[in-house]
Length: 299
Image (cartoon, rainbow, N blue to C red; front, side):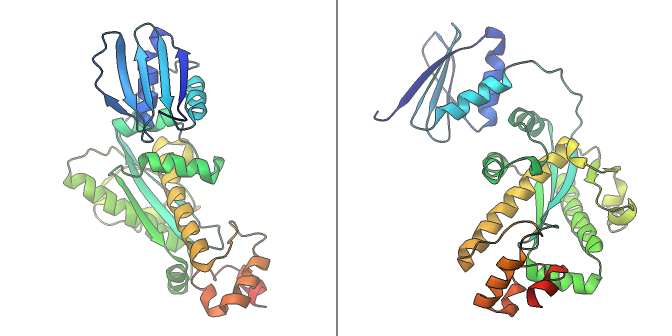
């Protein structure tokens, strides 16, 4: 096989299970191997092969950049962390509420034992800590998971709803309650036990979201606190929400052949340029025009 990389690593026997778990968490698939000296054999989504021998030698072979995999294994294999007590639960977070351009994305995610193990190995944390490329990689590893529920509020819909509600916080609360109700309804229909719901608190009033819930949501225990991404379910919802946001943001860039900056500062010049090319009516389809920034853009 041309242009193939082959790398060997020495692994401590106590770390054999961790290496396997870490590769499985990155969507490698286990394969059969009849060699009596082989403990396990895995194949990556890109076609690379990992063979773990009973002797402690791990052989990685493939055309992809194996250095990232090696770095990940070494980083994650340094120490054994104590087991955390975990109860399957639901977490909610949003991305895009502070971005002038692009949608608001709210995601609710139910984390069960299996996903908990995977995202801990992958190092899920607050999505704001990661680059877009890192987010895309992490999102691609979990996007096929069946128990997350997303609401994408595109700019024109966001602008319409803010005029109706006259309160961005209320709009956000309604989107939170929407994904919570949808998620809990789906989980109950599939007999999945959800022990509680955690929300990254965005309002000074804890009843802001719970007052918008239907009868189903009001039966559950809710936990709300600021910096909610410290909870693994909220952190996972945060990663997924930003993964969706980045995907939608790229589509918007391609559609208009335009670079839309993120955030709400340093966007005025770009927004003025967009209006000069596409007209002020089109701004409503790409930007949250309820932001005060719009006055400066159009003024």
